[in-house]
Amino acid sequence: MNTTHVLKTEQVKPNPKEEKNVFEIAGLNLWYGNDQALYDINMNIPENQITAIIGPSGCGKSTFLKTLNRMVEMVPTVKTSGTIKYKGTNIFDPKRNVEDLRTHVGMVFQKPNPFPKSIYDNIAYGPRIHGIKKKKDLDEIVEKSLRGAAIWDEVKDRLDENAYGLSGGQQQRLCIARCLAIEPDVILMDEPTSALDPISTLKVEELVQELKENYSIIIVTHNMQQAARVSDKTAFFLNGELVEFSDTNTLFSNPEDQRTEDYITGRFG
Amino acid sequence: MTVREHFHQDLGELKKLIHELAEDTKRALSDAIDALYSRDVDRAQEIIDHDVKLDKKELNINEQAILLIAKQQPFAKDLRRLIIALKISSDLERMADYAVNIAKSTIRLGKDHPLEVHPQIRKMADVALDMVNLAMKAFEHEDISLAKKLAEMDDEVDDMYSSLIREMLEETATNPRMIQHIMQMAFGARYIERFADHITNIGENVFYLVKGETYDLNE
Image (cartoon, rainbow over all chains, first blue to last red; front, side, top):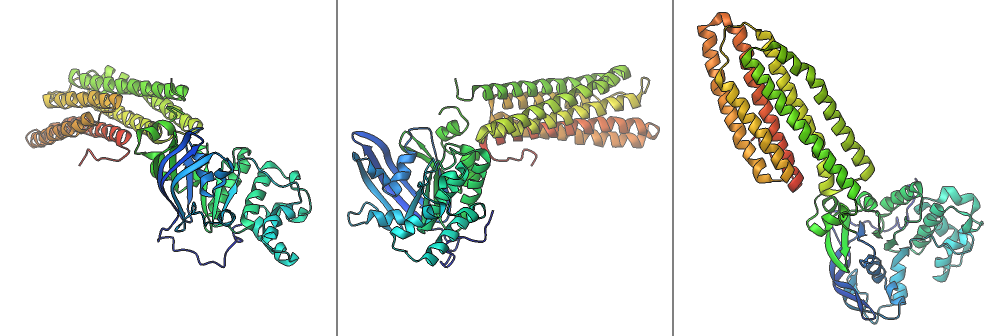
């Protein structure tokens, strides 16, 4: 996998020893209509690390993820209370531009969802919306993004072909490349490998490890082994509550909460 | 019913195999001590021959544990259960080897040696056998307080060993013609002392299982 080309190399990398938070979440509650889905979530998500979110179906982990870039508000009955600070500013602030937030906080979904367009146009779509028109600039972004998502070598000779012709694993990496093209700071991933075969899964996991140099990654996964393999920190959600949030090594070897132990050892779930 | 019922049943089976190996190891030591006192070289040879079966049991436990790690990808306490299954079975196998060493000493001493076997050797072995019972109880019930008692019992064995060696050393001075025989007896005591050290390892493994931390019972 190509590790030499990553986006945003011009940016100054933060000192890894000085841990900063990309999100600071305090007292977050969320309701779908009258049903409460998240209860008093308090956690700080570190910058330039991989944070995994695990928990049984219906525990609120995807809801929580989609709250971080306010995608959850696409459901009209959603209400929230509490604060989520993204780099110091509350994302629920009425003056906050949601499109701008989503530019900084990109998302990759469970099923690869390329547009029915060429590989090139899939990547160039976002930058074009942001006003980049010059062919030369777009070419550069497309190459950088595809390299960043470790798929350039596989598609460089067929950029004009329809993205639907790619395999599932390639399509998912294309979607990651599409996300990189708008230069976000954070990438939210909602079970990004659950529709992929084992080898494609490992490729995406490798990619995620490389991307954390330049991005903060938050990944929801049903696969506990995956969370243990790729993440630095892991949060365990249960019935809308954050039960435990700690270093991945601790959480999977010697969790503090009995409910975490019972879940990761398969005593319920 | 738990979600991983089959896996947890397999863990239970593995535990049974470890208890079985512990019983065999205890029997090997107690038979070896009996053979030593009764100068029964035939019985001593049987202990040596039987040891192959214990080695096979240890290998079987290892294979089962490795298979479960590979197939079930366990986390947390379940992973520790498998790791300590590997370690405890290895200690038990080593302990049985010490029983074999005592049997070999019995054969070297022969049927007709004139020395009386010092009663302290049996006392040491009795404490060591009690230690195995306690360690396996601690393992069964995941009880750290029992595991900690093993340290005191090991000290008792060590003290008996030291005084016994002093006595034997004096005897070599007064009875230099029997030095070869006295050496074999001293080896026997040494093997029991080492046997007991391995039991404290089992206690440490129980501690690791329960707490997820290492603990030194041999301090």
